[in-house]
Amino acid sequence: MRALALLVIASCASAPRCELPAKAAGAPFLWKVHKPGGAIVWLYGTIHVAGIAAVPASAIAALDSAQRFASELGDVEPDADKVGELARLPFGQVLDQLLPADDWYDLVDAMRGTMKEDDLRHARPWFAMTRLTLKLAPSPKPSMDDALTDHAKDHHLAVDHLETWDAQMQALVDGVNVADLQQAIHLRNTLGCEVDKMRALYDNGDAISLEPLLVPRDQATIIDARNAKWQVQIETYAASGGAFIAVGLGHLLGDHGLVAVFGRAGYSVERAERHR
Image 1 (cartoon, rainbow, N blue to C red):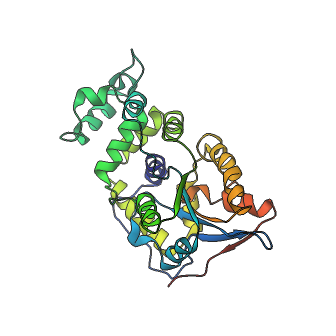
Image 2: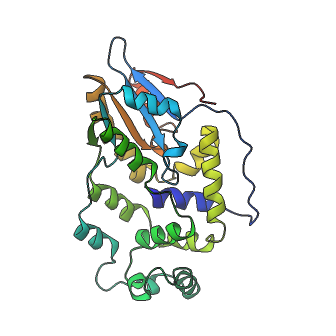
């Protein structure tokens, strides 16, 4: 959910000066989940603004020891027609009429050379915000999630997905509104710095600082409902041969995150030791 993560980061941006947190030897975002005598499920939290270089050796070792790999989308390719449909506003709506004039002109100016004005005019807020944030704060290619999937396939692990492309995109459609896009436009000049801070906090293993950035206020739509569906599938792995599960870190943190959910369900949940 790259767009949503960057939205929440942007909401915390305030000062133009970029001060990164000091480096610290924190624990990786990797948890060992199991019941006595049961198979091990590894829960690993990814961030969509970093690549494979940010994955600690302990997580790679856990992945290599697993029988199966599962991520939000696995290796499923999106339906281009469906993506196009969900990226465009319904007939009769245009973005330049939904946004205040000043915000619209700022958006057009920021996207100049990247997206045609007419295409931008018909873009849904989530798609416009995604394109804006990707231009201002480019993510590594492949992303961490895609790189882990490739690693699993290279090591001949079975690869599963926890949800479909259209389900994830529908969550974006429902979860990102015009006000969210306005906020990203207003904070466009500080977004790159905030992404750098997020990467640094991730490398430090700083869950306390990252939780408010990655767990949106509207959890019921964006996180909680999806976690509830994923929990059922993950429990089948725990009841069989185990698995390595890689999902956006926001799905693991907080009282409703998968780490807390499995702890309340009677599983032993242990965070891996620090990797530096």
